Structure formats: structure tokens, C-alpha cells
Length: 389
Image (tube, rainbow, N blue to C red):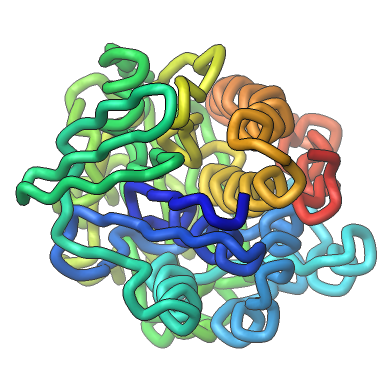
């Protein structure tokens, strides 16, 4: 098994975790990325303990702690008054309960950490400028072709090419995602431009009728990352790189409490983006022959539980553990899918349900018993380093 030639398509966060985990398990893995250079788009992300366990298991715990924020507490606030409706212990409480920390950080910092770790083990493991074109497989090998004319023979191929995965389309056909009726804005704001008291607690969800606003600190507390969500039908572009106007976000959150609006108003014009949210149904299987899927390519999900990146990180470690435990490639792929399909399907469906909760409940009666999160659903108690494969 250790002599297998494993090719991964897509060097995003999930693909790099899988590559590094396979390296640590003694496998030869090479990841092909369409971009000419590694640049992670997006802004902040949350790593709940289930994801932290995976990164610690591949030897990145100390670096992760250094580049992340570990908020001591979080909360849910009322849209109009700014009153705290739910207080959420974090910091030492989370570490004691789950054995791993709850972190928040910039996607680019996590991505760079992973790429450095992969290249430190094998400088040639990340191949850039290779946009996936197609694949052909027989009983013994897979040949992957790229638009630059390169062809690569592999024993196994892992599609990690994200939300609009071409590997998934090749295996299972193209789908027609459904527009959810939600659009989102994201922004990065210098914390120095805001009152320190306006950022308490360090991580916060504010809810109102048909809208929600999440914000937290990244990059050592120097930057506020926010995602603002609203129900709208006039914007249907599913892209993280489309600019928006700060004034548009302010108009959407007119009447919300002053500290929240101050965060929006302080957004630099070049750091305000918007995108439409589309939903996809879970796949009944991810594997066809010697090819399988991982991360958003396997289970693209809505952001309402903050578990999209975490699920891909879990996938990467469990995949490597399944390969290490198996005697054949078929067994490895069966073990991986059996260990991951049910959990990720559950999270996809619960993310869909959570959207309805946040946008339809009466904020005036919102309390602890109403709040749905990755923690209340038990998702944080999962450890991909020890779960059965």
C-alpha cells in the first residue's frame, strides 16, 4: 500500500490536510492545483475542536496556536438592542470539555501553514498551474489530464477541487444547485478603528428577522472578520470574489444596534464582498473505481454551522488513516467513505435547518434552549484522530 501513487486534485485547505496526513502516514502524495500560485481567497474561519484535533494529529498544533485566536467566550445578541441573549463559554472551558481548543483565524494563514508543512516534507508535492480537464480509469490505473497538456498516471485520485468540483462532475454528472434565497456579505475591518467594548464578546452572532451577522477577531486580534446574511432574491452569483459596496450592507442592516453598524461602516471599500448561497443535496456515494471525493467536492454545505472547513479537515485525516489501516486500495476507499459519509450528510442537512432557525425565530424570545450550533448538535465531540475507520 505504501508504494501507491496518490494524486490529489485541488490544493485548498482540505486537499493540503489530506496531502500532509498521507505524507505522515508514509504514502507518496502529490496535489495538483489550477492556480499559478497559492493564494487562499476568503477571510476568516472557525476551527472547532473536532478540526483542531486533526491539525494537531498531523503535527501542526503549536503553529496553529500561534497563528490563531482562542476566544474566551462567545455570545448571541439581539439585533436592535445589542443585548446578549445567549452566553457561550469558550477558551479553557472548551479545551477542558473536548481536549482541543476552539480557534478563529484567517484562511490565508491556515492555508500557508499547511502548504509550508507539505513542502517541507516534499518540495515537489504541490504542482501549480494544472487545471483539471478529465480522467480515464481502467481496473488498474487512473490517468488524469490537465488543460496545460500534462497527463499523470495514478493508482488513486482524490478530488479536492471544491464547491464546483470538476472531478465530481466527471464522476457523477453536473448538478443544478438551488438558490436558497440568502445572500451574504463578508468584510475585514481594522480592530483599531472600533471601540474595544464593541468587540465583546470576542466572537458574536447577532440575529434579527430574516438577517444574521457573525463577527470575530483574526490575526492576533488586529482584524475583525464578519459575515452578514440576509434573505434576498436579486443577487445570484456564487462567488467569493465579487466586490460589494459598504453602503449596501449598511442599508440592509438599517436599524440594527450601533456597535454592529459601526463595524460595517469601518469596512475598507476594497475588503467588502458578497455572494449568493446555493444548496446542494448530499451525494449517496463519493467513490467510483479508484477515484473519490473530499471536502467541499464531496459535501458542499451552507455556512450556518461554521463547519465547512472543519468537515474537509476531518476528511483529510480520516482518509489517511483509512489508507494506513487497509490492505488494498478498494478497502481503503470503502473505509474512508464508510467513516465519513453519514457524518457529513448529517452536517449538510443540519446546516440547512439552522438557517431557518436563525432567520425565523423571534429574537425577543431567543434563549439558550433555542440556540442551535455545532456544539449543541454534538459535532465538537468528534475526534477524527481516534474515530473508528
